[in-house]
Structures are given as structure tokens and as C-alpha cells.
Amino acid sequence: MQPSAVWAIKPLPDITAGEFRAWQELLETRSGIVLNEQRRAFLQTILAARLRELELDSYAGYYQQVTDGPRGAVEWSQLMDRLTVQETRFFRHPPSFRYLADYLRDRLGAVQAGRAWQLWSVGCASGEEAYSLALLAAEVQRAAGLGAQFGVTATDLSLDALARARAGRYSARRIGELAPELLERYFQMQADGLLQVCESLRERVCFARLNVLDLARAPQRSMDVIFCQNLLIYFRRWRRREILASLVERLAPGGLLVVGVGEVADWRHPQLQPVADEQVLAFTRKGQP
Image (cartoon, rainbow, N blue to C red; front, side, top):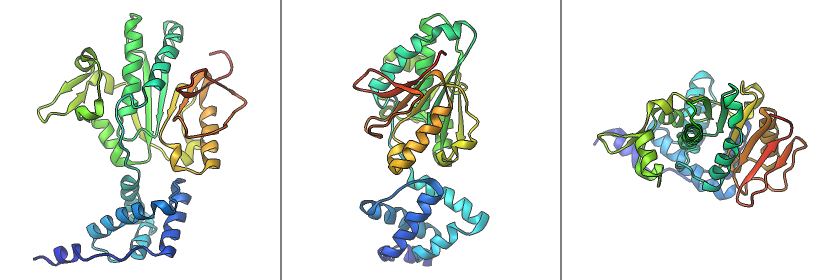
């Protein structure tokens, strides 16, 4: 048996309270992500797996590695990929997409006047939400007899998730129960059983790495639609409001901001008008588009 194999099955000690606090502070400072005491076992599982891969024997030693200059930056990216993995699927919250479809139909005049729609998926994970936005925009414009005149920006912190998103290959479970004509129009079955998003849709989506703590430096401006669902749950309440305020600044007059139901409570913004739909948490920016 190889020495590394012997080491790999050696049990690691539980993370101490002091070590957990140090990791909590590091995660929140660098990414805004908050892990409470109930998530301690989750963090330990993620860290322990990485320690075994690197043949390290202490959480403190790994902490030193991820905070050590350029080498640490690479390892930090690896760790964030593990911590931010999300289980998602196409059209994850149907009421939000139904509302979006109606909203886009009401804005076809802008496209007919020569202005392409700009949509943004914030915290896009492995791309299902971004491609859902692109598919819906394509269908609304197609039904109106228009060619594809839209672009989707999709951002996430995880490089691994972004790589999978760019590939655009999904299992049938991730795609869900799309109508057969949509499957035929926008997906191609691969030899391995996965479904590939068609090139005409993929070329409308631009994936980029972005930490939402750095929104002040984000180039996105005058977006027609911003989807920010299943992301804010990772942050403290004050930080959620800060992130949302930054997104409002990047929304065009008349633009639509869609948030995950239950992710913020009693939040208001002077430039936003809540939409009248009990199943959706969304707002439009005041002013004429």
C-alpha cells in the first residue's frame, strides 16, 4: 500500500472552536459568505476532503496555505469552488420566469426600435439560470417575429462552476420538463446522454467571474433584467441590502430586479416599485425605459 493511501484513511481531528472562528472570519472578509455554528460540520467536511487531497494533517496548516500569497490565491479559488456548489436546474422558480415572460413581452417595442435587451444572472452557478433567461428571451422575440436581439451576462465566484456553465452540457434532470419543441430547438442530445445547449443560445451568454463584494467595480450598466436568486442567503442581512442597492444602480429605468422569495424581508428602495405578484419577489426601477 502506498504511503499516501495509508495517510488518506487516517482520521482527522474535529475542527476546534478557535479554528472554526478563524475560518468564519476569513470567509466573510474575503467573500461575504457567512457560516453559522450549524454549518460547522459542513465546513469541516469540505476542509477535511481538501486536506486529504493535499496530504495535509491540520486545518491550521491549510489555513496558512490559502492565505500565503499567489499560491494561496489559487488554492483559495479551489476552496471556494467546493463551498459554493449549488444544486440548480432550468427555470428553477417557475413563477419568476412566468412574470419575466410577461414583462419582456411588454418591452418588445424597445427591440423593434433597435435596442437589444440586456439580462444579468448574478450568482449563475453552473449556468442553468443564465440559459433559462436566454431561452425565454429568444422565445419571446421569436414569437414576435424578431431575430435574437439580446445578451445575457452571467457571473459567479466559482471558476469551476463557470467552466461547467460555458460547456453548457446538462443531464435531463437539470433541464426538467421543458416542452418537446423547446428541447428540439435549443438542445442537442450527446452520445453520453447529456444535453448540449445549442450554439445559437450559448453565443448569447457571456460568463465572467465576479465577487459580489466587488460590485462597485462591475462594468454592467443599464441592465433591463437582473436575476439574483438563491445567492443572498449566504450573506448577513445588512450585506444583502448593500448588494441589492448596488444592483439597483445597474438597472435601467423601467428595468426588472428579481430576487429569491424569502431572501430579503421588508426591503424597500426609493428607486424601486414592488411588482404586484404574490408568488414573486421582484421590483421595477422607477422612470421611463
